[in-house]
Length: 495
Image 1 (tube, rainbow, N blue to C red):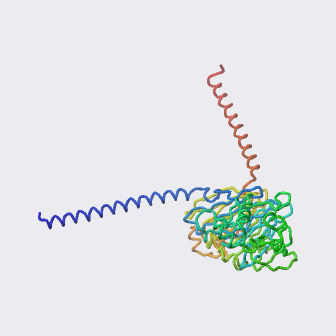
Image 2: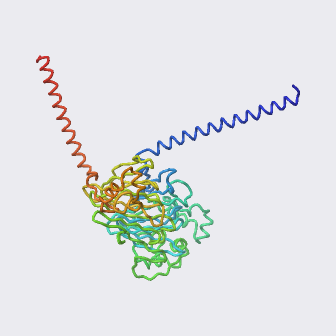
């Protein structure tokens, strides 16, 4: 074999070897992908995956806390969204900050005053139970519990579409000290001293005093100081009060170079507002109260409210909708699908059951839920909610679309089968059209249906039922044991 032939042979061997290597690598990647899909399928089939329990306490102080339930990491979820729970004690402040995520607030209990920068002005809104309000990502805001002796509870959506990472969210505290640390602390001292026209000593003092955390008390007895005085004055007088308070909470001379006005004016800007007490100031959109809204649907078995961008335009900026449902004892939200959005739900009151169905017609979840539980339903998946027979079942939630939701009902007087009513539907079920008409004519109610037969009993009732069944089973077992002993005696005689 000549050199030329040998070179050609080596080239062929090299090409074949490379091809074999590529094929083996492709097969390995294909096998890895297959195993990954099987693992995801097993996780997908988990009955509990639609009940969200991955909770993390991101803030905890003596004056309050914030807990976040993370969005599931799933390929079938069109839009990740975390759910936050904020609790604040009476006369407490959530210190000024901005986030890398937008929030939709829902006031569950209590009263709150929210202040935020909106179009370069300070806007304040006083809100009560049922109010919905949006805080955009990047907007500086604070919250004050203004309810007299009442703990404040807020539920919020945390939109991750503008966030820096997949974590819960990132806070940037504009006010703070050693805990929380203000973003100002990261600048060079010369830079800050020049920017605020203060000495190094005054600068260090103001950036090291706060140690109580992101949620602090503001009453005289619990935490006397500058924030207490600031929050006790009328809304329209805060600008004047700021100029008279120094970093030690004492009255300062108005001609002093450094005052809290320097800091607060830099953060919030100068405001000229009238001094009468208001529930709102500034140009920010108002809040929207769900309890004041006329129900979109109502009958003897419950009611439902849905809020979209056409009724409350701020929702359109986040692309998130809001809903609230109240079911009477033993009633059921008819099986339905949401063709435009996934749904997150938070149980506000009572006990019920959530049933979700996979595309192949098998049960994805059939689980009892109670107050505080959080669940989610993927887009397109059929589901229903059933109230306990012992009391009302109320749940609130968010959808991943701010457009008007048009759920498709699979049962009830307004179901899709009434719309489709034809030989095609009868053929699909392999029944006659008369049978189909008879089936569809039996349910007169729509959307929210009576369902006492399948409504879950209360937990205590369920325990009593199980104890009674256990007692009866023990009695039956005792009777069977006596029969066996009698049979033994009859056959073999007594000892």
